[in-house]
Image (cartoon, rainbow, N blue to C red; front, top):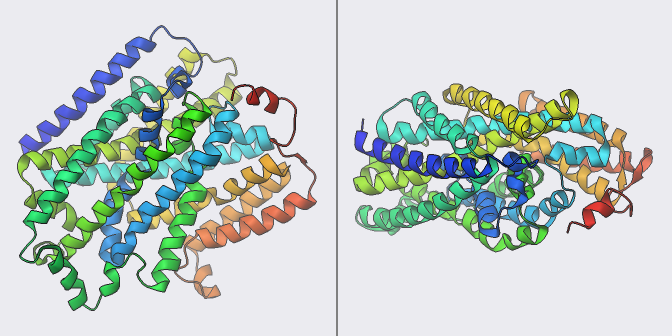
Length: 490
């Protein structure tokens, strides 16, 4: 075990997290204003919101998921990063603005304004479960970071990282996450740039040209192309753009930082920071993955460990520690929001909505903190028993596809609770059947990502049912309370 690296990384994370966490917790101790812990009193500035939006969807799938994807589809894996750049553009210009305008605390609460309590409960339960699924994947990533560098098992690494992830959020909530993210982002990108410089110098004779020749000699030149083969472009590239956009753009995990922003204008300004910060990351990671597979010394280790092991063996000790801290920071930031989001949904949409409507800020903090611990501990305990990262993501992301379109229908066209309930139920049944039965093969669509059938069902069924079933005018079409009240806050 490399104790020096482990101690250095843990010292950095603990000092940063405890320092900022305790500072903001002390500042907020006397603040009884509702939403202080969950939404930072809606006071986060542009830089903090932008970085948190970027890092919230930049975790295990962006690092170890892309390492795995690169092994099989090469540079086409960069589309995972492009998908998240598209996601952030859509979110910042549409859904984040709409939810912030409504002054809600959770996305299920937003659903209740549009469709009522039954759809709210359905979305709350599914969204919380979906985000917890992502949380377990982030725990796996934390475990891999520690396992690669220290020799610990993935489960042991996940436990250490899980404790850090809980500390990342439990002291001061959304404000702590945002400001810790701001520091970590600067550290991460400097470390990543230095890593690419050192990796380039450490490549065997021929450098990147040798890497390119490896794939050409293997008759896999498509691995070097962003567009790959037509099949890759359709099944992976377009599929991941659609599934990521339609799922995460209405997810509590991504929208909670936007809900904590000072204003709608604050959210709009984040576009020029969040999108490049997130989108460029995949390019670096994909290049490292391609180089690792092309080197015989690491090729035999397989898709999970080849790239991390190459980094460990090629970089000087101080940069290994820096890079580990950088990668850990990226995963911890996603872990923090992935544990904060379902805890918020439970507090607002379950506990406060059904059991104690009069709960104040102190009680909200208490309940949320309990849920953060429960969710975090549960996630890192199962981290080493998970399926491949990308396979899990394909299934998870398809769940929110109908909700995205129903929100658009309900805001700008027509609100039909019955149409929403039926559309979601049928689409979710199709999503599960597509993953766990022989339905795709029997229809001749084996290998087709879940988002395609879910998108087809959601649009077709949702449109027809919304048109024919009774309902009310779209929420943003109706010039009456509560929309008029929301408009006054813009």
